[in-house]
Length: 195
Image 1 (cartoon, rainbow, N blue to C red):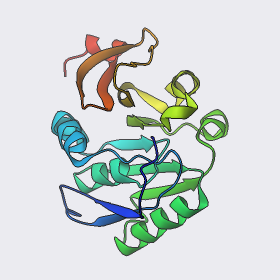
Image 2 (cartoon, helix red, strand yellow; image 1 turned 90 degrees about the horizontal axis):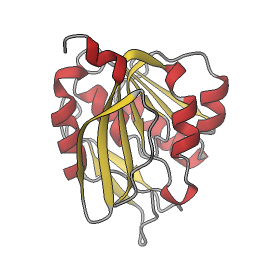
Image 3 (cartoon, rainbow, N blue to C red; image 1 turned 45 degrees about the vertical axis):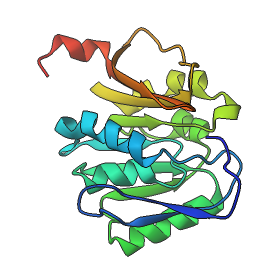
Image 4 (cartoon, helix red, strand yellow; image 1 turned 90 degrees about the vertical axis):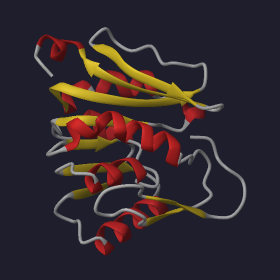
C-alpha cells in the first residue's frame, strides 16, 4: 500500500447487494486501496467460493476487499485495521449498511492480532499490507491457524516482487498492473479434495 498524493478520496463497492456504496479513503501513508479493475478480477476468480464464506482481511484499510466479499455473498468478514481514523470510517460504513451481524471491525495491529486472537477459521484471507513495511513473511507465518484447511489466500505486492510463500500454498491465478502483482492461492492439502 503506497500512499497516493492529493486529497482524500473514495472507492466504491463494485458488485453485490451494496454495489456503488462509497468507502472513504483518507490520504494516509501506506494506504493504497485495490483498484476497481483488480477487485473485479479477484472477485470473478472467487465468485464460486464466496457463498457462505468467512473472510479475514488483516490489513483492511478502506475495507474494500472485505466489504466487497460480504456484498457478493460471504457470510461474515473480520476486518483488522490499526489506524483509528480508518477504524472509525469502517465502523461508520458497517453501521450505515446495517451489517454489524456480518462484519466485525477490529482495531488492532495485524501481526499482534494474528498472534493473540482466537482462531478465525476463515475460508478466504486477504493480505494487502503497506508495501514499504515488508510484512508478508511475518503475516504468512502467523496466518495459517486462522484459516480453514481448504482456505484461499489473496496477496497483493509490488509488481515484480512476489512474496515467497510456504509450500502449503499453491498458486491458483495471478495478474498484475504496472504497480501491483495480485495472486490467489489455495492450501495444498485442499487440492486433494474435489473443488
